[in-house]
Length: 156
Image (cartoon, one colour):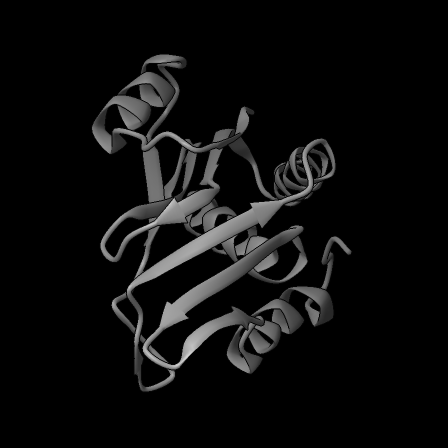
């Protein structure tokens, strides 16, 4: 269950094809791709820079994927998260999950992205007309995470 933190862009179709080809038991593939928006909190965003703590970030992502695989019967999962300077419309993150059935893949993918948005050690800085600003997790991200922590069998 690979986890990658990189500056380079990724090719969605190539990554999904490789994940799918790894196991003939795959009956479902669910993907999430996060991108840089050109607007946030009512302000234009000209660029975003993502920083991370090497080693710690990869370990945190690996732990999140491990929690998902303990909770659902998934075949495989892939997380690719970019760091460095990014322009609007650039891909930031790919979460892809394979399983025999769609329900497991959807739930695991949503779980991984919800934990990634709140618990993974990334720091985002946006460039706006008013200057640079650090971006915190939104309250809706915290609420999304809370459902996993309060549901039965939740991994914490």
